[in-house]
Image: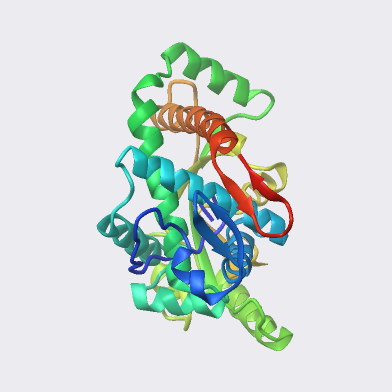
Length: 314
């Protein structure tokens, strides 16, 4: 996802009592593994978070990694709540509906997609709520302190250019959905469908309806990327794909994915779209740095009680 990769997300109504955050509605569904400020993390939460992290990042995560991610969410939500900027039910529901739409589903259909991956929608809503709340907090406390100058933008664009001329791509992912545990024969059938579609596809403007005619297919939201921000391997694939065509199909967690190349144009340091994109990326990078520093500081003062023999840590 999210990023170029597909990203599963969900949001269902979760009743949150004082201090209860992502996944804590499941406290009675498993053994308590740890508490953060008195809020439990259970043996139900951890495998749910492992599945979610694998879908989001495309690689498996250990139980310990999932536990630490859950601890971070508890801390983030508690801090957002302290400043009264936690995401409300309407924000979470709107974010869920938006992600579902980008993935080609309505909310109920997206619930089913999550469950097919072994994730309860209400659990992901907890994750979504923690992320939104933390974003609200960072934006409220630090958003106005970040300013990217024109000189910084020109320097960044010039550094990126290097030996590679900057090119703006407009891309749109297309996914033929296949369950992660689908048998090889089903995967092969969907791969054949993808190759057939690739042969017929010639325009982002007119041929997306051909995708809609395929059962269990989804068209993701269109996005823009500079070639200097892409991996060399993916950049080579895009360079070899003509405008209006699809990249070769590849297997992902959600199915068979191809990327439609809707346009590609050479950019320059004076290109408005390129400047805006770089400004956004630089702002995001600075916000990420602030976020990581803030979270590290909070972890030093939070009361984290492990039930596996590690005891209480601050």
